[in-house]
Every structure is written in C-alpha cells, then in structure tokens.
Image 1 (cartoon, rainbow, N blue to C red):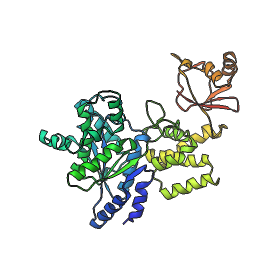
Image 2: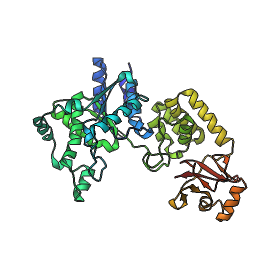
Image 3: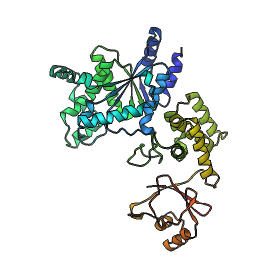
Image 4: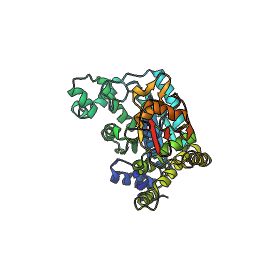
Length: 405
C-alpha cells in the first residue's frame, strides 16, 4: 500500500496547481480505507488527434496515477466536440460533424494507449449521457450557473468587451464538461492551465448535483524545442510521440538548458526526489548540463520506443554531433521568408545573414569548396530543399547555427 504522502508527491510532480491538496489527501485516505481506486477524469475533444509531448503531459500524469492504483476514465467528447471548446478562442469555433468527431476519436483512442495503461482505463463517449438529456434537463443544468459568472471567463470577457459574437451554445460547453464529471462521479479531473475554468466548473456542478467535488489538477503548458512558444505542430517546435527514436532523441537534445528540469518533470516518469537531485547537481556543477540532457533524451525516447532503441539513438547522436566537434550550446536562427525560394532555402543568403560569409559570392565559394556542413555532412547545394527544424549548419570549425524554418 503506497503511503498517502507519497501519492500526493507523485500527483503534484510538475503540477501548476491542485485545488485543493487537503481535499485530495482526504479522498486518497477514504479510497485507501475502502480499497477502491479514485476515478481520474480526462476529457478529450477529438479535434487534433496527432499527439506530441505537449499533449502527452496530462496523459503521463494519468499514467503515474494509474501506477498508484487509480482508474482513468477518458471521455471522448463526441457530443461536446460538435460545439468546440471556446477556451482561448477569439471567435466562435466551427462545429465538427459527427463523422469528423468519430474519425478523430478513433485516432485519439489508438494514440493514448501508447502512454496510459489500457487495463486501468475506461473510454466513454459523452453522447451516452448528454444525448439522453431532454430539454427540461438542459434548462435545469443551465440554471446552475449565471451569465455574469460565464463572462468572467477571459475569452468570453474579451469577446464581449470587443463586441464580438458569442453563441449561446458556447456557454453550454463548460456546463456539459462539468456534467461529464457528474455522470462518471469523477474524483480528480486533469487538464492544462488553459482548462482551469472548465475544471472548476466540474467542481461546482458536482456540488449542485449532490456529489463530492472533484479535485482540479492542472498541468502547465509545455514550451517546444524553441524554448519560447507552446509546443505546436504549426510552429514546428514539437516532438511527436511517433517520431523515429533518433529524431526524438535529437529534438530533446535541442531544447534550451533552462527548460531541462521542466521537461524532466512533465515528460518523464522519474520520481520527483530524483529530479530534485539532478537539479541540485546541475546547480552545484557536479553534473554537466550536457550529460543531464542526454539522460533526459534517453528517458523520453525509452518511454516511447524502448530501452534498446533509445541506446541506439544515443549512439547515433554521439557519432553525428559529439565526435564531429559540435559545441553543446548552438544559437538558433529563424529563417526569414526572403531566404526561402520555390527550390528551397537560399544557402548563400543564409550564410551571409548569419555572418558566416561577408557576401553571397564568398558564401558560394564556401559551398563549392565543401566548407559548409548540414548535421556534419558536407553540402554544396545553393538551394537546399531538405532542411528541417533543428538542423545544424556549420561553416569552418567554429561557426555553428541551428535553424528554425
């Protein structure tokens, strides 16, 4: 039997906020005495089914809670998905069709079990209970909250003050998500910090329906490989959970050093006490940041591809980067549009922009002489169509730049 304090330590690892810890302690104690697991809820509106490490933050937390003996209920929002979560939206979100929602839901269901324990997971579709409500039930649900409270929500507030339209149906999204918690009798609901309003709505609605309020466990949003913006496919700063092992390993190695501990907390299952030791060792200089980051890359790659694949990815990384004399810290250069051509990146202009050559004619000579490398391999292409985010451009022995398209 895992002690309550230990369970709270695991639950709190990397969390931005828990509302509230005393309630969580009471729930864990009650569950332990009854010999029953807590019900951990995660709602997914299946609108973006290609999961990366940013999406996986809450799924990793669910897996940690499952490993403590608790049960996950994943709610696929086939009903709410036809409205769309207004969180962070500056305008009404287009509704998805039933067909689109179900197609995305199937993809999500396939991907989440790469992270969470299938044996300790129940997948439910919220049309099961939301579709069964009659109009009288909907009126009763909508009476649980006021328009004034709804307009306190940041996205609604901005749109209201900016005279932007807000559909009445959008007010029902957080109400329905709250009702999901009632339907499954959730003990804990997980979400990102951008879901705070929705998670707290669940606590309110449960209380109104005579249930014990759920714990709201909010995880921070994860910055991508650029170290600035939230991880996103559209920004190209993401690490996909299905990427090849060497690509995953290399991308983790490309994150800024200052994000390392956050990645340890949010993307690995390493115990918080061990992470604290790693952090202290980096601070006192007994653990080189490069070695700490290599362990991080190995841990992340192992989670998704296994230990053997992670070892091979590390060997490949050492062969390509370390043995070819690449430095630990390489500045990032975001390639502007004026360097892009239909045939690819204009290498002569790139080399002059980053200061590796004083002129395009000199840059052309460097390319022709084989003095320019991409990821350690010589290139003479004047127009390079194969460059990717985080590729390393090298000129001579000391000039290195990491590119972002």
